[in-house]
Structures are given as structure tokens and as C-alpha cells.
Length: 172
Figure 1 (cartoon, rainbow, N blue to C red):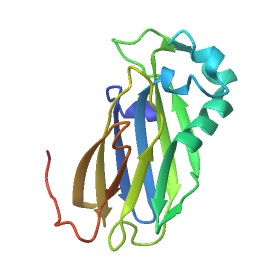
Figure 2 (figure 1 turned 135 degrees about the vertical axis):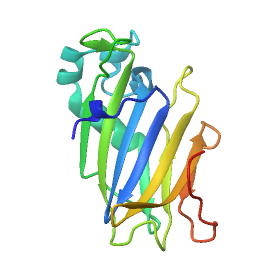
Figure 3 (figure 1 turned 30 degrees about the horizontal axis):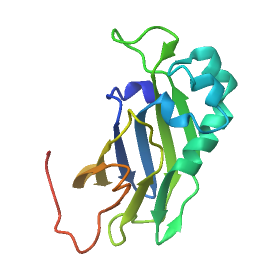
Figure 4 (figure 1 turned 90 degrees about the vertical axis):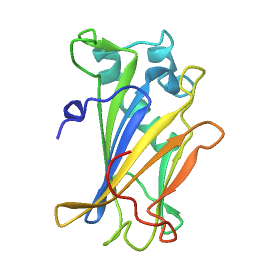
């Protein structure tokens, strides 16, 4: 599945828990990577297709270090990360000020049903001050819980699907 299939604005993301995995799609400013090994590629606030290709591993490493999922009080390593420049009529071909990441995280069976899933974002810059995440828990092809959280540099983590929270259905 291509991350490009999930068109969303910068500073937004989704976390979809299906069976024993979390599928995460994030759209963030390339400048959140300015302090990592890809700093030269993003110094001008734009990432080209060639720079993305050259710095894929550095960008993945920065995502692994700066965006974390905890399940059962343990940071869970990402299974895979797919990075793309967004496409569409409002984006220049082959260059962008944002990057879209699709991340697959292996969790345990019945993840999100009895134990919460915590998300922490540490990727910020002066223009990137919020990340709005919509989390969905799906069982047998049906959405059973949905939560929305807004992360900021001061509130950079959220626990989704906490057993103590009442179930929230529908859209917000």
C-alpha cells in the first residue's frame, strides 16, 4: 500500500489498529528532520525526490528515534517505514516541504482492546507545533473505537484506547 494513497495535510496522522498490527500514516514538515543526519537535505525546508532517495535511511532513523509507539509499557520497534513526497495538484512534482510516512508496527494479539497504545512524538520544529492523530481500532472489519488526540511539544504523548476511558464511536 502506498503512503500516497492517504492524502492528508501536514501535521496530521492516522493510527489504525487491525488485528496485531498498527498502521500509521503521518504527514510532517521536512524541517522536523533538521537535527538529524539528513540535515543537509532539509536545510532549505524542501526535500527533493533525489534527496529522499539518498537520505531514506537517515530519515527512517530519525522517525524511529523521534516517533515512538509503546505497547505494554515497552517501545515497539517499527516493522517497516515507507517514505514518499506527497503528490497532487497542490504539490510540485518531485519536491515538497512535507513528507508522508507509512509505518507498520507489530503489536500483540488483541492490541488496543485490553491494553492501551501510547504514541509519543518528539519531531518538532518552529513551524511544526502540533500533530493531530486519529486512531481507529478495527475488529473483524468493523470500527469498534475511534479517538482523536492533538500532540504538541508540551503534550507530546497520548495513550489511545485506555481501558479506563469510555468507548468513543463515530467521528469528531
